[in-house]
Length: 517
Image 1 (cartoon, rainbow, N blue to C red):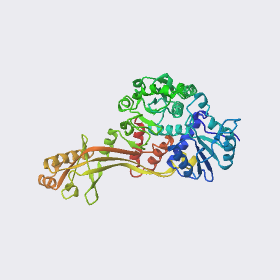
Image 2 (cartoon, rainbow, N blue to C red):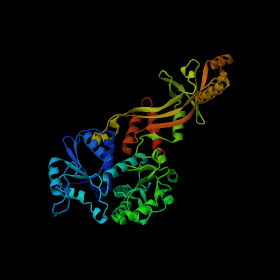
Image 3 (cartoon, one colour):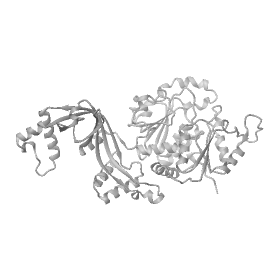
Image 4 (cartoon, rainbow, N blue to C red):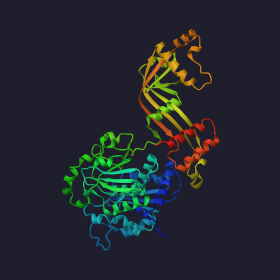
């Protein structure tokens, strides 16, 4: 039986990558299982790691496997990789024995080994992981060498979650300054996966010296040709950022200067302005921003970019930011839960509101506790349609079984400060507006003037107005966006067929979200 390693995504077809991403999305929705029960994986870290080590250890644990972490040269013997070497130096054992022995202990071997940064003609041979793959009798996984294929998959899945179909989306892979020359692995991988997904890729770098190795440039051109995308190199910041859908930042050293970094340093220092900042992001097509991490703030990207909603490295699932969509739900579902701190604890009220020019107007009975809370910070929760989602509606459930029930919903959270208004004329205008709005669909709309004047006056005296200027607004529309299109179609069909309370409204909202750009 031929062993299939995972050393680079270039060894795998687009169909295989898509299948891996679909499986990853399923694991993400239901992350715990026993698919690897009784299995073990050796994780060899020749270089430091935080996210990769954490994700591999947790991934193994969540699927029932056991991970053994080794750091050769620190908590494990130093390893020799040269064939025919006379081992009279610091190394204690040869890769031939290490890989074969580990293969008898574990079911998988994963390796992280950075290049030496002295001679690119040597580094580009990727000797460490290639040696493991040569001698091991179990599959070998690349946790970053001169490429980072597992990170490629995570990056592609995150982009699909944010942008949907990635074909022809403009992807800017931009070099950024760093005080030290860094590995080209992540840049190589970003180029490979973006072109494999059919994106229009621009490699932005200061000078031709920073263009990536021709091996990866050629792979990128081939991927683009096969998947309907494109690849070009630019040294023009404004031209590159203009109209971008994704901005991916990374620092890397110039290949011609490997082993001669003092000569490269003045070039690097002269291009600090390649930092990702608000001005550059403003040129884009409301692009999402991403970086592999770790990232030096205000060196590679500004605080404002890193803390913005467009930053993809901290995914905000189901977040809705379009103000017209948020206002639309508030107008369609104006009955809100009002939460405030009364001093002795939280209090909640349930009231209808009218949205006028970014300000919310409502009213309460004069004896309501909110009347005594002028100036207090409040949270208003507007509830849109919601409903139970059966896993039986997902086509993937019938193929893999890896689906669980969930609940779809749409809510808007509004933060502001309460202003109490005790003004009869203001109240009358508000009641007329509310009445006209909510009576509009009636066969014979009721008007305030239909009631006796003394009754209206007494009613006005019994209520007090509320005004809330919106200081912050957040929306969460959990509408199966984390599922593939065929699962979303299954949910739509299931809701319409069930036709329970709110099901049609929820299906309509899902369909509307699907049709929005």
